Length: 201
Image (tube, rainbow, N blue to C red):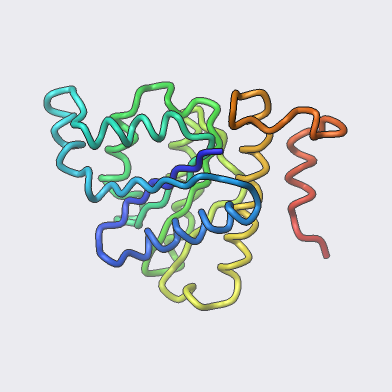
């Protein structure tokens, strides 16, 4: 299965890219995936030009194709003014309208303070719901103090497991990368699959 990470980090090194990498690695532990990273920082000029001339440059077109062809997405943005960054939003504005329809998406964000954690529910989740994506229940927010602290690893593993399960469920019967339908002894509703991933006690 093909997993694409869209990172809107601006600095090098970037905590936003680091979070995306850790989420991708966790998905890779739960399912067999080929990972491709789209760094929006490198596409900023072409994204702006796309708005003015209506045509994507070569690098932007390749990124759009990668996202449209992915079996699942991890999208990560830094928080600016209590929302996603302008670069992050602009990239999804220049995608084809149906590019994300039905596609599993894990939403994540980084910020300097835990006070911005609701950006996942107030900004990111509505955006991808509007784009008709299937957003996994667990989003991951990492504030500066979360790195190296307890809790972040657990959220990463939980969200990654949900994405891997959804990707596998949707890839049944999808050509050469498909999960074999006969590998399942019975069809299990997705809600039950997610319930099994949730910690008990």
